[in-house]
Amino acid sequence: MLREKTQHSSEEGRRLPRSTRAREGGFTTIEMLLVIILIGLLSAVAIARWPSIPKTGPAARRLARDIQYAKQLANRLQTMCGVYFIDSSSYRIFQDNDTGTATMDPVTGKDFVVTLSGKFSGVTLSQSFANNTLKFNALGTPLDGSDTPLAAAGTITVSGTGGNRSVSVEPNTGKVGES
Image (cartoon, rainbow, N blue to C red):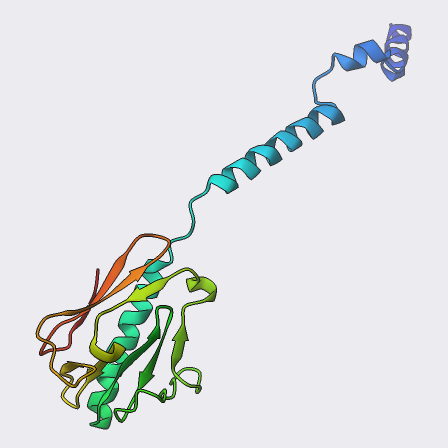
């Protein structure tokens, strides 16, 4: 009986022939490489078809906050402040009715000029204010560039990736909304 155990132990220690080992469970290196390559190809196709990140929503929110800031600045400084739209992709916040000079940005300490580039690249603004200017008097009443109170809500359309968004300024109250 002792002899049988010894003989059995020595059989387990021997190497199995190659054909026997191939039948054991597991994957070969080539199979693993093929699976990894296939996953990589599928990922590349999926990423190429992934929709672009919407930019108009964040750009519209930024514009609405900046218009609200101009209104608060006019009220705080008791002077004419507002937003001057330089072109379809940039604007500046001004004070003292000087549309040619930007006020200081309270966050950066630099001129308050916003250019829609970087994360906002491809976003454009369109508006119909006289002289491309939206102003607020010391009471927060919105005016167009010719110092005439807004007769109807003023609207700025933000266009680009993610569709169109609108930022509106209500007459009389100057309430800023986004949709």
